[in-house]
Image 1 (cartoon, one colour):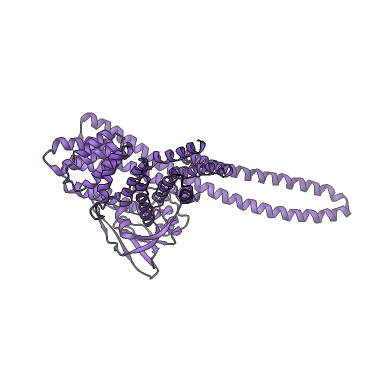
Image 2 (cartoon, rainbow, N blue to C red):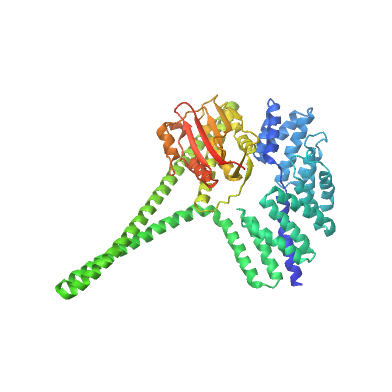
Length: 577
């Protein structure tokens, strides 16, 4: 009976979380298609706003604007279908499944993404444990070709079908779907999805008491979880192993896994305190070194007094003099080491203080600007001045985006400093990485009427870590927009100067920089508190982060620029041979 209970806990733990990992769309490309449609109907304000809020995942605002769209565009079937899709998806994200299902069922089959509607209805049934109702939806998706279901992964459909049959106890039908899902996810090299797929297959075998088949999958999921940053997945994989070992009566291993589980659980709580802990550790280290210096100074004084007391005896003097000289040299060496360590600590502390000072100044400036803008916003709201309201809302959005980018850079900088970042070097097509990254900045470029051109060849393939490369591109593109004048232009293209490296160039027609600033930015410790242009003050943390991540990717960074003649930020990455 005890063994049965442990199995039940294990399987229940996973099934409670798995349905939320099945959302595996090519999200950025899908959002790009939605924005193209929004641009085509830009004259319809409600549709444009509903699409924008949908992409930004502002579900309440999406619901409000899509309802206004339905009230004003009942004759346009295309816009009506999009409105119902936006509303259905928003309700689903808010866990209002009944309302979500009603909205999806109102969409006509002529909707160009109707297969996504089928997928959503299947997911709603699956999340509500209506497994028999979910199966026909996923079967219909399974019959579609990849071309007809471009924005939905086949592996997710197979995985969901396997889960439905697994919940219904039909293990024979569940097995081929889950096995094929594992194969597809391994081909896609999505570590998080592979872990979930392994645990699904493991539970399939574990439910049938086929421990010899199940346990290797639990172990592979546990080993892979060490390579990702998601503490929840680490926690689930570790707890699964603890229960497995407990069932195998290996209580020592089970206890070790339980302790690791508690560690990941604590890590979730401690993650937001990383800066406070780092600051306290540095302060403590400085105080300890100061204590050591004071203690050594006291010891030196005692030695000098002792040596002077022994000068009255000539024979003893010669002996003690030699001993004193020896100890003096040793202490001098120790003092030099301590002084050098103290200087290093002081430099680190000064850098930390400067960083915190500049960051806090920027955040305070952003908050003050937001506070002032909100005061004006309330005034215009009372006066119902819609034009000014729209302008202030865009201003607030820009302020918040700037503060968010600063905090995001700060977090990634902290992860680099504490060596918690995970990098997976793989072959990447630059065009699609640039396209996905630039998509999120198009609204900012439109505000300044900046012309953007992605001329990266689709055939260009480099070796790099995808996530860190996106962070580099986001920072460089953000800087290009920030320093560009209205009606300017930004170009991203590649050029080949050697056979081993591919140069990715982010060129803007903005303010540029002096030769002194250019050389300063290229230094390893180039943390600037301000630049030539007083209206674009910043920490320089983003560029430092870029340089660190480019270096980890075994690449090189350079700048070509002149004042008032724009700038070229050049990222050189190893080519795929």
